[in-house]
Length: 253
Length: 216
Ligand SMILES: Nc1ncnc2c1ncn2[C@@H]1O[C@H](COP(=O)(O)OP(=O)(O)O)[C@@H](O)[C@H]1O
Ligand SMILES: [Mg+2]
Image (cartoon, rainbow over all chains, first blue to last red; front, side, top):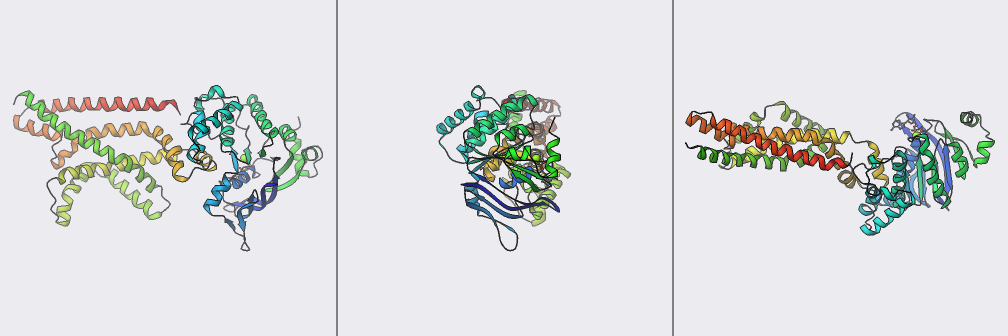
């Protein structure tokens, strides 16, 4: 089953065309890696499919349910608020710079949304929160505040926070880019663990080895377009497009 | 006049000052939040009207504003207001003036919050009101607390401006006794009272700031 379908997505900022015409889909349980040079529109794409930016035209479907359609006038039409709110529960987003809530303790960061938004009973939410933090290796940090944690720990909290709402798919925007190199490993390990549990994921990353090993499918983006896509083995070992080759060459060391 | 009587009368005045102080804060602290939100509204008229209100409140003397609120209804509209209006005028004057200052402080705080906080809240499903009340506002309050402390300390001294419309708060009382007895003693005593009040407020604010220092 396709958990996400993106069709002919276009997004402009004023006169700047950031996403030009982009289509792809994600099957349940699969991991899609998105790579590409900085400024190519990867973050914007994730923000569009997370409803943080309004798209200009195209279609977005989640679990077969339509969130955005585009009529003959070429303008994007969003579904009604209630529908979007329901669809929003299908996905979670992990940010490059975590965006934890600094005034909440670790456990509150993880549980507040499910208590406030999803109206889960508090003890049930706490149980979920503790389990997730345990899984992230943070059981001793439950009552700490974000500023007391390392970047890697903060990112693990933010992954737990995203998982707490029980999304069907998770989007990652360069989850290790804000971390010191020695801390990226712990985050990649966590994401690899999620992949082993068959979590459906879209991961924007500059960690080429990681993308190669974890992703089922790679999309190479440049200048708001998908330049090349395919299984990692094919894309990394035998890239067809000159731009893909040039981009990948920068990572060979 | 025996000094006990003087202290007693000043204490009565002090009670009035505290009344003005407390009511002003109770109304102007929340009202300031509304001012901040109107000032940042997408509605052109509302935004610019609020801007004008703030600039008048900050650009003219508070003492003049008090006089306009108190004497205005009579001189402009020929309305005679009941005797209790003096107190109401004091509160209206102070609340509207302080709400403007608090509004600008809150606005600075709100604008300093990283947009990523809104993004995270939205993806987690918080609606606008929940995002503001649970995620944004607590961080804003923590950030603006030092500026708020400045204002609430200034307000103690500002309550004495109610003498302009002869409201019997402590300074007005001190002035009256001093004039009748030709002595400076009431002013010195009132000064000491204001200072003690100040210390209590400063201590309270410090305590609140410490309480909030667990997070950043
Ligand atoms: N809110 C915005 N307003 C205007 N331009 C933006 C905005 N966000 C991103 N852009 C522009 O869109 C382009 C793509 O940015 P981004 O999606 O962040 O790329 P990437 O994540 O691949 O580095 C860049 O040229 C960037 O300057
Ligand atoms: Mg980016």
